[in-house]
Amino acid sequence: MQNHKITQKVKILPIVIFFLIGLRHLQGQQSLETQPFSDSTETTWQSFKYDLGSVFGGVGYSYTRPLHWQGKQWATLGAITAGTGILYIFDEETSNFSIRQKEGIPEFIRDYGSEFGSPQYNYMFTGGVYLTGLVTKNEKLRRTGVLLIASATSAGLLQQLTKSLVGRARPVSGKTKDTFDPFNPSRNFHSFPSGHTMLAFTNAYAIAKQFKNPWTKAGIYTVGLIPGVSRMWDGQHWLTDVALGVAISIFTVESIDRYLDGRYDEKYNDQSKKVSWNLDLGPGKIGIVGRF
Image (spheres, rainbow, N blue to C red):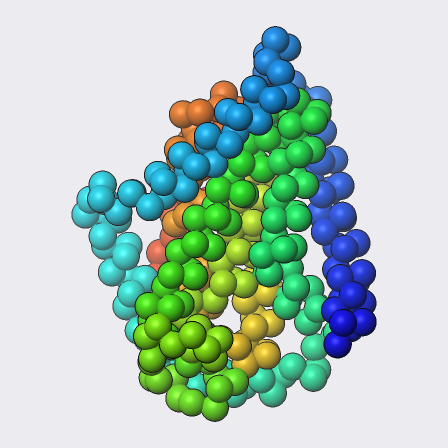
């Protein structure tokens, strides 16, 4: 078992390195057009302390945003709740279907999905992005790292608390989708929401903010969804666990990014945030549509 875990880590490591190099290269291309402002008198330690404050501030900001919601935000929450309720009807059917697909999925995709959404790989990736920006004094990359770390921390803490409070049984437990046992210490009752989905998709959603091209964004989102889908292949989560995990990820990144707008000069793509997410219901289709 230990050798298998080591082998998996060796397989996943090149993927993580590829992401880091690719992101740094793209940031470098952007800097040719607009060189990020950096105060030469600011030391690395001062920057680190400032960024650490931004992480904690961003986490706190994301938790308090519901206190400031107005009609539009509550309407969005209602739509997400309604959509989750509709998906709940199909939880057992989609779970059985997903589990049957597992053996037909290439092993490297399954390995990526099961490992990249775990906390250790998440913070290895997000920490690498941030340290690269800190060392090179690239404020935009620093901000990206702060956004990644703060979003993962906020979503991670929330999902740990929610899993225990809800106590939903996982498909692999052999119990039905409507089996709940709050505060049960067994991992078999920590299904809702999907932590792998939340950690992986916060990364994908935050990184996609670096790009204007909708196809690039869609590709990054797709990669970010693989860990959530892989957990369904393994019978670890129901469809609603994954869907709500995605919704929480989007809310978390958007709220923290808005907070960071007041902390850093560098803005993504130098444009106002025009992303909107809406529930799309129609004959034979259920989904969430993003407009950007």
